[in-house]
Amino acid sequence: METLITIAAIALLIALGMRLIHRLNAQHDARIAAHHFGDPFQAVRRPPGHSHPTPTERAAHRRLTGTWP
Image (cartoon, rainbow, N blue to C red; front, side, top):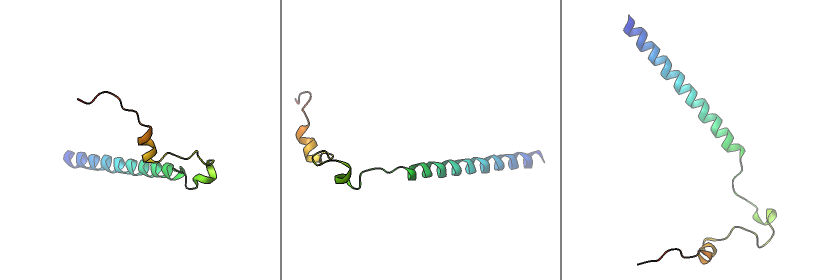
């Protein structure tokens, strides 16, 4: 009888833990959905010439550090 109670208590704790994790994930997803990442209309939000640099522009401005043997 004690074994059944222990198994039932463990199963209940597992179910409560799963429910808590599910609710936390849903809350996190809602927070992520509320934020807008990136600029879909860069020309509207930034004046010309002030957009993000392209990868080639970043590479051109990169300075070498250290020495290569």
